[in-house]
Length: 398
Image 1: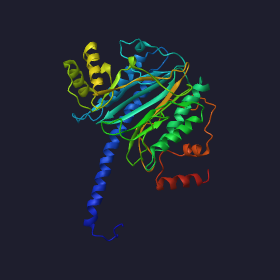
Image 2: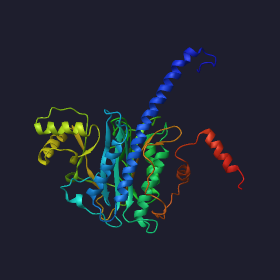
Image 3: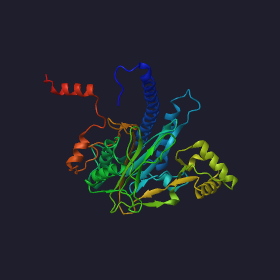
Image 4: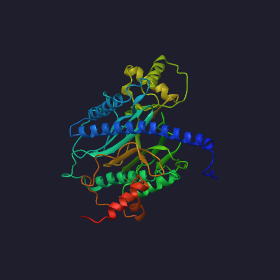
């Protein structure tokens, strides 16, 4: 029962004060998330700008990583103790490769050059004070409004984009994670392509990119995820990946794996080399994924040290995934957003490359419920703004 209006102010002040403090604390955290999101967005734009025919995978990874380093280094300079930097290393995954491709400079794929019409997934992330903002976009090398993408490639890109647009509109308190997955999968099926099996959207938080709540698209029948209810203030890093392959199943290339993350498990490492490597991981990457090139130890020592850390679950790997169907093309859109009653709050800005003029798919969403949802804005306008907009639309034109 709510208190009467004339209740002694001293009885309501503590509650009001607590609410004000909570709101202020949320604003501080939101600013850090959004600052990281802007840095991530600018870094992706820098990679897109550099992704011309002839540019190499290694060059593009460096462009993204350097942009994140520069961006995070230019903010909150007065707080010398605040951690900030990469929340996910730059990955450049081409055509049938789905994700996590960040080759070392000693690898042959580091020098792979982009070709006209290559479908390129660019993913990276940054964090401010441990609050991560990760994003990914799909582009096609050489495409433009004068030379648009068409056919099944356009269908796959648009499917992933529309799936992401559906997902962000479903991030509201009370929605069940499995329902989000169901609706996103329904949107993607409208384009006659496949959802990549088992791609996982994770809840994120301070120093966490793999929280308890998960949204899994096209899950393996043997690994059905638990259903969870979304709550106000939950933050999710949403991954929508699509393939033109026949069944959506993925393969992995362990030999190409270069990205790892500390798990939080404990174990007394036996080798001095391993202890040195793990100490460096803690110092340089903290809780976030890192690419092996970040480590300064010798290649032999690094390999041996990482192997013992993996064997005892101190770090976990992010394998390079790909679709094994000959000629398959994979696409991806990835964003970070906060669950809110008025509609999700974007942490990472909307994709910058995609447009209907560049991606010319002939397929459209036909499901009426989905169409209606996609026509709605992500954020609901406040009452005053809504009344103002309604008045403006009702006013006679000059």
